[in-house]
Image (cartoon, rainbow, N blue to C red):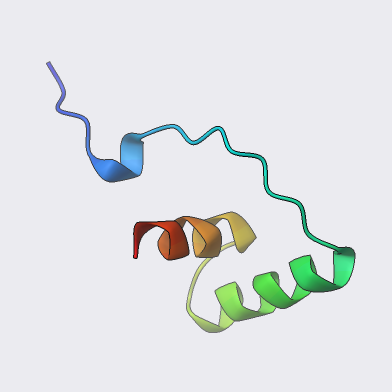
Length: 47
């Protein structure tokens, strides 16, 4: 049986951004070696 870790938890809170905000999040994610904005948001939620 697999043990659940924080990264495996499902999140169900919708988050809305303007197109400009989302592009900025994508830029920050890429600068920090992440593949997309979702990874950046997950990292922020874990901190």
